[in-house]
Image 1 (cartoon, one colour):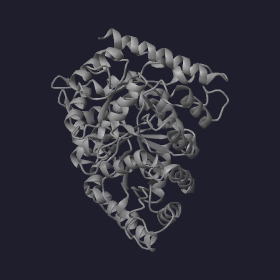
Image 2: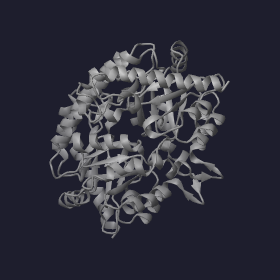
Image 3: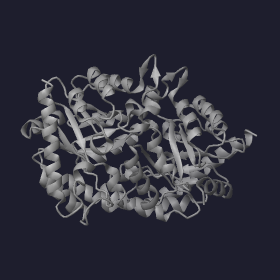
Image 4: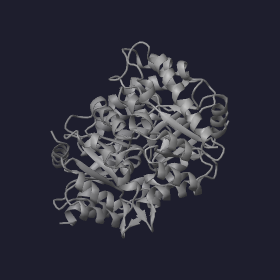
Length: 266
Length: 266
């Protein structure tokens, strides 16, 4: 099944735009094995989300064993929920092929985030996997995003050029964009450039992004295709033994808030 | 020891600017275990190089076992030769910290390549490791590099803005730049903007970069601080059992060529 269909199916079934970022940080976790932690979070929230998004950094920080945990985590997610590799990879064609193989064929992800700095031949090996989703970094959620992403060429900021190129490159219909919730005006611009693309929207919660604006500007005309990703606020809602229940409660609250904003927008 | 000192020491000892990219590709390798392959290449070439540069994609493509091989490969390199993680990572501050920890503390690399698209706070956690080298992608060696890296703001192409920012951010003296040998004019420009930074220069060999120009424009005024990286041309000089000997012969030829060009430039 194509990524976008899988996303829309589960998003409708679970009535949600919420994605949980599975970013295990031993300093913030209760005293529990990382794989057990991930399993408990997935079991507690799988009826509330439209996707899970492990960021590879947190697994690499645990060495090769961390990557083995990642492999098992991806397999543990129910088959109808897409799993997005937040990897932000970008390399020359030959190497990008190896990254795409790693993420899609070996680790079994349904989608991946990629960095546009190296241009089309760094993206192409990913989009050639036509059933997989490819989210190109456009306007990221961090303060340093302005250093280069807002530089203008002929009056057009780089992140908008990236959005335009993404639309042009989207021959298989499997490209999406990453736009941070911390920059609502930029999100609105990107949505207007790419009205039908799935947008992956981090920056809610610990990063202070505006949830109402993320929903209003991020969702498409049908109120879909915004993947609103929250990590720390849900994962570490409690740092005690009741972490999974606390994560569920927080996830449910955020889903409800998102749906309220969706209904208000209509 | 600081990365640049380690680099200069071994570069002088081995009289070389050659770096070997340890990119194991099972489709091109002789029928041998990846770790044994790497060990054989390192044993055959350690007196000819100034650095080794594993690209993480080729290890991730082997799953978590590949990462275990990478850990062992890094440990196998003699302690006086720097090992550069060609990882091209770039993520928000919190996540960049996890990547820096993974590459420097867990895998034990001496340096890493990073992607500038997310701006300063994505680079800062790397440079805060003051003994480690941080190579920011500037002008990459692939055809798609022109898609964004040559976009001009006030007449200055993005890759030059990146070089200028890198100079500004280089408060600990541990930043370098990645500039492809396939674009000699751009390499010359970058070297003029950053006369003292180490430059990591891929693109020789399979990618068709100009070795003479890479040496002439890439080395600093003292004929140092250019790390000329070659992967496939050396690793797969032979695909038979004599691969290590063939790799050594090719590496020696390239080192000699580089040194001839260095001598001519004086």
